Image (tube, rainbow, N blue to C red; front, side, top):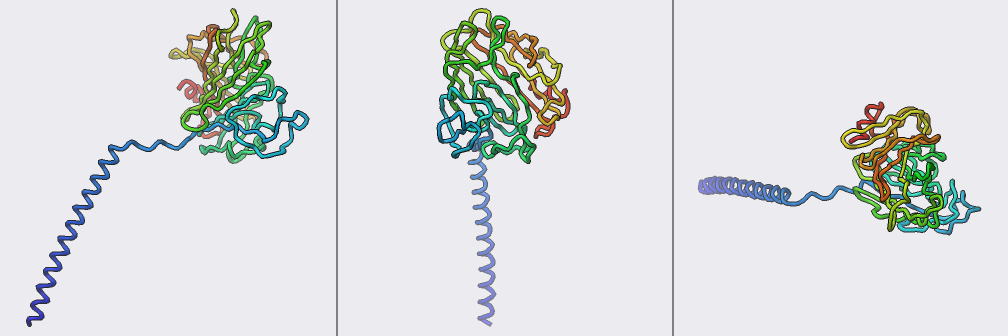
Length: 330
């Protein structure tokens, strides 16, 4: 009997002790949770991972014109380089023939040879891929494709100068350098310097800062003149290739815009291309056989503009000129 009584008392004490322990553990858990909640509120969120990048790679050896189409060594990333004066179109010494800027929506490249024209890679994925893509990019792949035929036109947003009723691209210069200013992050950028660019009987050193940020398909071009301004009567210019005979232009909310939409991609699919700039630069549309040309008549010291594109198969899902115009003016 004593044993049974003692056992009963012991069981009751153990039960009460267990209940107290459970209560203490619950209170401790609530305190920890509250502390973590307060810490989370007071701690700034971690920066999102880089979602834009610059791809600028060359082969390890020197450029040899006679071997321009050969891949003779591995490609290595470059951050600052002087462009070989004899660098020719369709070369494979530079990966993609020039620096490429990519975000989660689109990618653009500038040919690094004397053409200095811009091109478009349409993307079917939000993942950054251009650092892994090889030379097979003219066919539509799982990631996307090269989607624009540029030729001798201004491609999309290529910089130019209008002087004495003639259009000069940034081609004939004494020396051309390229520098990766910001290679990865939310905004990436590249700087080109064109030393002693020829404009008729004049020369000027022109600087182009080219950038791309996340969240929009808009690439920004900022043009300036080192230590001075353009010759009197000259103006910076740009445009889009005239694959379609007509382009819509106008002003809205202090912005000038020009764009075309229709079956004009390399694969004969719908593609929108456009230019946007502040009206303070006094943009004027001029006739040109190859491009829908925009001349910024108030730009002696410099100009800033954006270009943007959307392809019917890309991740943005644009399917009409109205939808493209809406994106362009955002």
